[in-house]
Image (cartoon, rainbow, N blue to C red; front, side):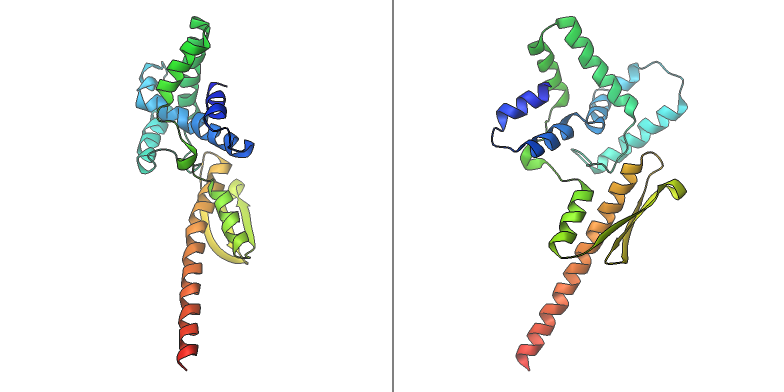
Length: 203
């Protein structure tokens, strides 16, 4: 609510859809999990879960590749986000003051993602790229079989993604990999077309 309020007044001309995407980037599980890691809040969680410790280590290594946000390519341990949500809830109840709570939230979530730094979801990027170039996109769901999604463009295999954690993460990874493969194919095609055009002119 606090982040939504800030964004609403900071970006009055931003359409509702973009505001929703922006809010999500600033308060979703990955963002909050990053906060927990940044301030070592997970060290104060009492538990006897070796699995959780492994997930934290894996997450800490994964975020090094994405300084701000992976846009769905990382599957963060939800427990990390829960710690931050609980902390913010405790501050809100204890202070009974939204201004005080906002000061804490603003500090924890710094830096907030701005519209200029907002990246599009890999699946959205993939569909937009193919639609722009008149290509048919198909995602083949094999997650129940092997944790994977495969992507075909005009019935040609262009990429796949895998995740043992979440189905949507596997699909995002597949779209991410396929997107750059399609860009490469389009670039090569443009080069060939250009060469043929130049040869035609010379002849």
